[in-house]
Length: 203
Image (cartoon, rainbow, N blue to C red; front, side):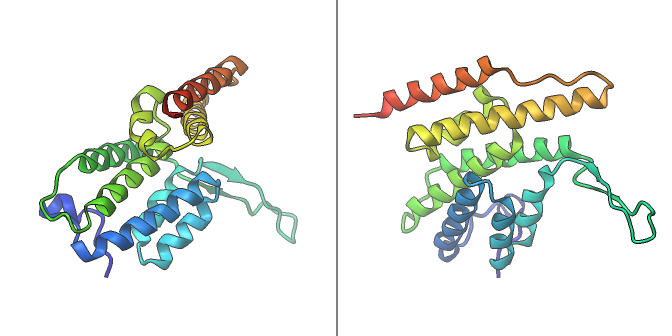
């Protein structure tokens, strides 16, 4: 039976040792789907592993929007979709990410699955860090440990920048202001940062 999402914090106990490897494998799969832009597949994987609560948390970032649909009788049968409380969802993702990142730094006495435990915590931090769309300086620290190539660094930085930009523009629209486009200069900036990070780790 999969553990409830708040089991560790509520009971002040780590995940059961025998569950650690499977948890790390699940989070690796979710991360790879997220990297590929296949969030629906990531949710399906969570449901397959009976972590329905995690599937639901992944879906929280869908923008609240109206989907128009005309019925056979010509009448509007459209409906609203997405999360109307997306700002609160982003705050929750950021909190989950920071908590998991701190857990990755803990030293656990039972070291049988210590590598898998730390990997799972880092992946959890990276997944929710990216979904939160936090500022690069704030959230890239928690995503960086999962990056192993220039492409990883570039994807992480661009993903954080784009998600943060979309959230900011949605807030502007909500206030009745005009949305701004993301500048080409900002994208070049991220490209340069990714290249510099790759140069630092290259042999």
